[in-house]
Amino acid sequence: MEKFNNNSVTMDKLIALCKGRGFVFAGSEIYGGLANSWDYGPLGVELKNNIKKEWWKFFVQEAPNSVGLDSDILMNPRVWEASGHVGGFSDPLMDCKGCKTRHRADNLIEVHAKGKLDGVDSWEQAKMSKYIEDNKINCPHCGKREWTNIRNFNLMFKTQRGVTEGAGGDIYLRPETAQGQYVNFLNIQRSMRLKLPFGVGQVGKAFRNEITPGNFIFRTLEFEQLEHQLFCHEKDADKFYNEYKKKIWDFHIDRLGIKPEGLRYQDHEKLVFYCKAAVDMQYKFSFGWKEINGTHHRGVHDLSNHAKFSGKSQEYIDPVTNEKFIPTIIESSMGCTRVLLVVLHDAYTEEKIKTEDGKEDTRVVLKLRPLLAPYKVAVLPLQKKDLSEKSLEIYRELSKHLMATYDDTASIGKRYRRQDEIGTPFCVTVDYDSLEDGAVTVRDRDTMKQERVKISELVEYIGVRIK
Image (cartoon, rainbow, N blue to C red; front, side):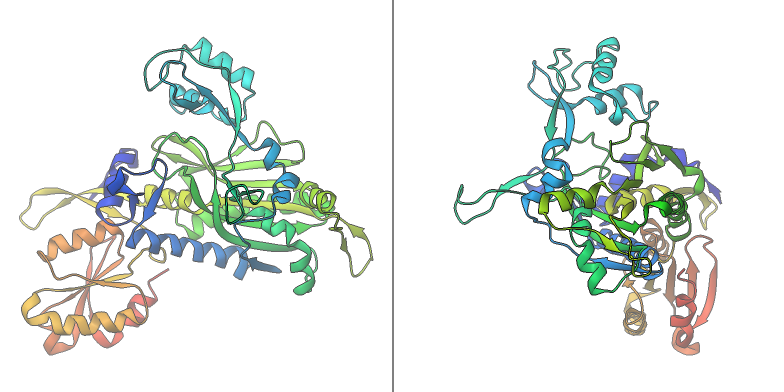
């Protein structure tokens, strides 16, 4: 069995697999779709939920002095004034005068550079404009080079609060979940009697009205964030910042099973004025190195601004020293669907195998970490006519303990391939001997080795191997 070089993974292959096997569908597809919106199918929602469970376990359940939160999507508009999103949350956009299409300047540069430039989104507008002019970058839609000046456009979705239009003020769909953690800092600290340092984790939807460069689900209008905020004393912040860098590295390798050679850190060249330090974790996709996580030393800016705009003190009182101070925040932020894309991209494998008749064939397999796989086991009767009753009995029992699927259509070889493509770690084949000896054949996804196992021991056998 020969494994292909993973450089052969392309977005076209992943998109085809995701649609054909029920991971991801284009949003509103029967109406022509809606750009940059996607629906997660039966397998996609299982994989996404498994990623969220692992993140929650790692950052909240197993982390000392860490709790969770689920804050509302809609917040008082003053929150976004205090956070700076109303005045400064924008993309550098330019219009083509020829065809009237709108484009992100940094995306045009990245496409032209074919992924060889890093940190373009942090460039000053003048630097972007000069690059576009010097390299004679044309409109990808009409081919003309008649650009407007770069302008900043706010990324927040705005709507109206009230029964009738104009009856209420402007209100926004949140562009990030973090502000819910900040405005609830004292509620959480007091109700849970927490001492610094303590963390707050949240999984929730966010929305950004941005023009995206494609690349499937890498950047979308609606997405789920996995954010953890650590509140601490300023003197300890550098230590925790470095700890969080290592923590996110360990999460990707140990919990998601990502190969370390596909990961790297990239420090921010340009820091937001209040940020003390910031680093992105990047993954090497088929379309280049891209950000998949941000670790930020945010200083005291967030709580200080909320205190200023709300008029409510955000000071913490140390119970031992009675010192009063605004806590410093260390943040870990990542998008769940972007992580899902990383997991799929990293797991996609093509292997040269020999068929039973000695011919060479290609096997596509998602080598997902078993704990993340949508289905942990597939039950496959060798023959539908005589073995379905026993097979369904086994399937129903397994389903009480873990996610299982049942398939009795096509040859056993084709059914194995289907399960390989969706990453199912184990296949249980029920044959005629099973009716006599009470045992089944269990096939391992990665090695394709088969082992005879007693039906009464199946739950334990599979359970201990789902890691």
